[in-house]
Image 1 (cartoon, one colour):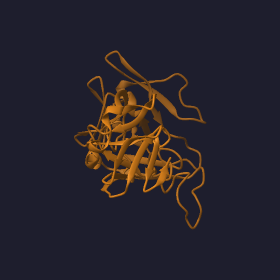
Image 2 (cartoon, helix red, strand yellow):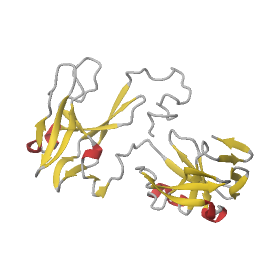
Image 3 (spheres, helix red, strand yellow):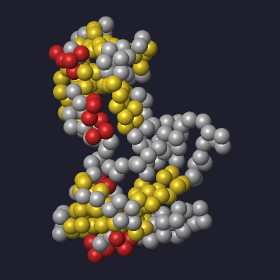
Amino acid sequence: MTSTLGSGPLGPGGGESGSGPPSEDWWYVEERPRRMRAVLAGRTVLDSRRGKVLYRRGEPPRHWFPLADVHTDLLIPADGDRTDEGPANWSVVVDGRTAPEAVTGPPGKHSDAPPLDDHVTIDFGAMDRWFEEDEPLYAGPRDPYHRVDVRASSRHVLVTHKDITVAETHRPKLLFETGLPVRCYVPFADVDLGLLEPSGTVSECPYKGDGQHWHLVAGGTRVSDAAWSLPHPMPEALPATEHICFYGDKVHVEVDGERVH
């Protein structure tokens, strides 16, 4: 999630504003001077300090870089190169490894197009590694307007399934994240761990880290991936370590007596 998705300020479910929501073709470009590098098969494909971030309503931010900062000797045109209506596409080839159509751009030259001539965008997942300055990026590029805040709370959280109490606490950690509902993380010590089984599902988030999922077995039923925890959280989510969060659409979760969906 980002500022342009969900209930973020520029997302389709955002709050009210005096001039109404942005139009469907709204865009905003911002300079991103941090050094960004992309690596495939041990070769640097991109090394740039001149990146720009393109924001569009209802879309995640997309990073664009001058084509001059890309090692173009590693690019080959993809089938169906640029037309007047659409952008060009290139595949990246390094020592027999190919990332098909991993490089795209620029977005177009029509009058209302973002000013990104001679810039390209690179598929994050197609590269082996990304670095922001000298730190590796995880799961995807980060939106500077996206926040994660974890706060200690005394709210009463009750989790039940088939009239069985799964967890109950007065000391949750509340995780507030841009564009998403408030999440209540319950200490493992306040959970009946005998009802949980580790799942093979692990989600990835560039803001929180790995989400290790858990199955719930209670009342003669098995609820797959009913909850998740953060075994290796990113710095912003560290206070939620040794806590678990349950999906309100899979089990019954109440906060101060009100159902959470």
